[in-house]
Image (cartoon, rainbow, N blue to C red; front, side, top):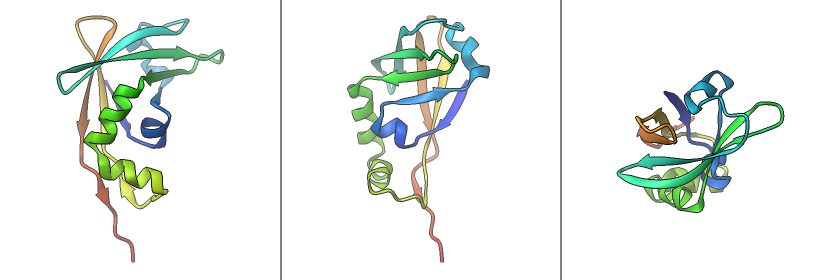
Length: 116
């Protein structure tokens, strides 16, 4: 399981970095591979991209980016406006019984942190 805070990359660049320690969950890929992410009962096409330095990134298509924007509209607006005084929801990525399908769920809700 990987828990990642949604951030600018999640909303605007359609992806998130995968910690090297979690590469095994994705089958330790040596090259970019197609995967499917499942969230709220829907399936979305994605890729696990492998960079020359061994870094991995989960990259999704515009459909999942739109899903995130609609699920968390306040968080999306905060990202677009550059507001850093917010607590972003977390995305949990988990393997499923099918090696190329990964379940995604969310914890926490978007909150504006009031500062004085």
